Image: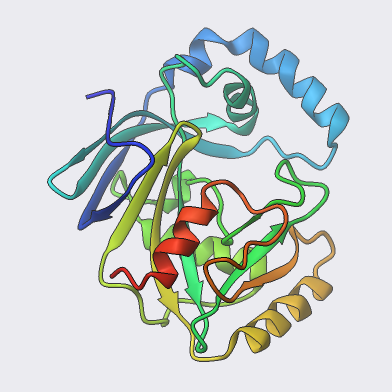
Length: 238
């Protein structure tokens, strides 16, 4: 199967079947020494980095509106080297975005903190899949979305109405699975809540909220994958 899905186009997804392989990722095995050396350079530049556990794909395909794949748990240090050697690495990255829609139809994103790898970048609150996001070996995408939004913003989307289906956008840099989550409060109020939460954090992951009110309202630092998602939302695609 390897990696077999259309690139640079938003596709509807009715089911996601991405499974966690208990074995090591070949990229981690083949690059162990380089991973350790690179990690020393990374933490010298950003001491706050933590060598936790994330997942990297070894297979992903789009079939009949279904996303099917296989991934492996790796150390974050492995992920950091992979970012520099992703071409022909036999590995890819996938993650999920809860597209947070305020009651006034504006989108509420976040700007990452200065101590993070993606310092200053703007996107929807999100993080890589971790082993905790899998149920019986299969990824629970909504669990990941809700967990990451809560950790970064303090908002609980557990009971928020959701879009009836997922969508996916795959590019050379990674594959994002996304779904609308609807809040009743207007964007300004949601942003106020996020800012209040960030102010209580000892070491917040994000700098703060970013409101996007229309398709041309593109803030500085917007991650490249976000422009198509913003246009998709304001075009009213279901």
